[in-house]
Length: 177
Image (cartoon, rainbow, N blue to C red; front, side, top):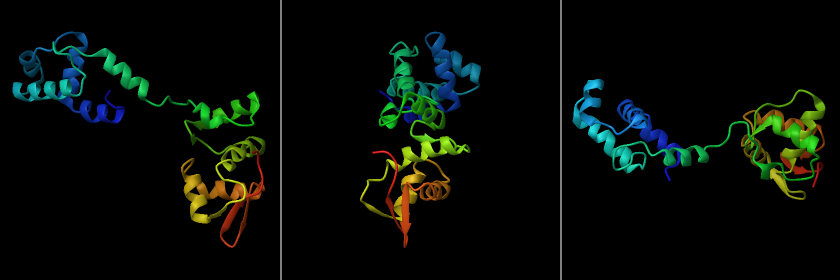
């Protein structure tokens, strides 16, 4: 199966995209498509070859819809939270709140309401093992994986007592296990 990123590299060419569009309604006639596009038939034939090699066109130059379905299935679902990410000590209500602020494992926004923000911070605190010491850079890298404003997240974690800081070293001191 062609990964979504490879599909984009193959498909995001005007001639190959035109071939895919034509193949969606029936077999591609290279000469007719070249004339419609005002391109040399060799260029269209080259695009057909690339699409066949990628597994997007069948031998009779029709669109392979199953290949497209497989690519679509491999795409991350917008707004969907990875269920494994929410595993833990959350009630159904808390999990629903968390799912509103995460897409995949990315934090879409930092809640302004303290209760919701505290819940999000408790989930982020679970990324740090109790008893281990972390340098500020390690904390930053961990939090940056969730949201670009890692400095605010780090400060909130300390302010809420979920992480403790001393001399540039952090450790988890609160939150759920």
